[in-house]
Image 1 (spheres, one colour):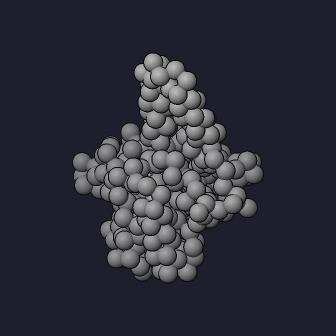
Image 2: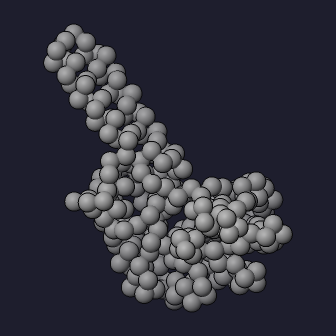
Image 3: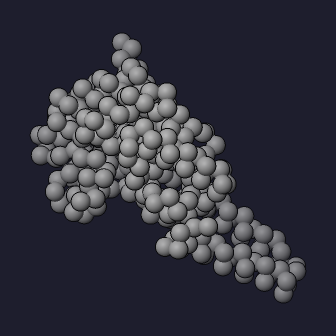
Length: 267
C-alpha cells in the first residue's frame, strides 16, 4: 500500500471524477454512451500523453530544477545516466576531478552489479549514485505498480549493498512514466528527478551541438542531463560526453555556478 503521506495528483482525481460522471450519464441516459465513451477515451489519452512528458508535474512531484535555496547559492546539478560504463565513467570521473565538480550518477542496478568497484569509486570521489531502475526496461512506462516496485526496490537494494548508501532520487528510463509510479516512489522514500536541459547525447554525436543545447539552459538551479552509458560517439569515435563535459564545466565556472549533487542541493 502507498505511504500514508501520498496524495492523489489533481489530474488523477479529476480523471476519477470524470469516469464517475461518465458512468452516471450512461445510466441516466443510455443513448448518450458515445459521448461518455469519447470523454473517457480523451481522458486516457491525456494521462498517457502526460506520462510521455518527462518534465511534467501532473503525475506527482518532479525535480525539474533545484530548490530555491540551491538556486540562490548559484548551484547547478550535473546528472549522468545509464552507467556505470567501464570505459567512459572513469574518464568522466577524471574530468570532474580536474574541475572540482560534483555530479549525480543515475546508475542501472544490473550494470552496477557488474562493475561494483566503479560504483564505489564514484562515491569515493565525492559524487552520488542514484536509482535508474534495475534493468532500464524499455517498457517501464507501461508497467503496473508491482512491476515498477520490483524494478525500483531491486535497484535500491543493489546500489545500497555496493555503495553503503541508499539512493534518495529516482530517474525513470527515458524519463517516461505512468500514474502508478508516484505511490511507489513515496513508499520507497524516493524523489523523482528529471532535468531542465538535455543535449540528446545518446543520439547526437556532434559535441558542439550537444554542448549548445546544454549551455542554453545553463543557469542557477539547472539540472543538466548527460550520459556515460549508451553515449553517442563523435566522428573520431570519442564518447560525446568526454568532449562536452569540459565545455559545460568551463562555462559554469565562468558564470560562477557550482556543480553539486542532488542530495547536496537539499541542504
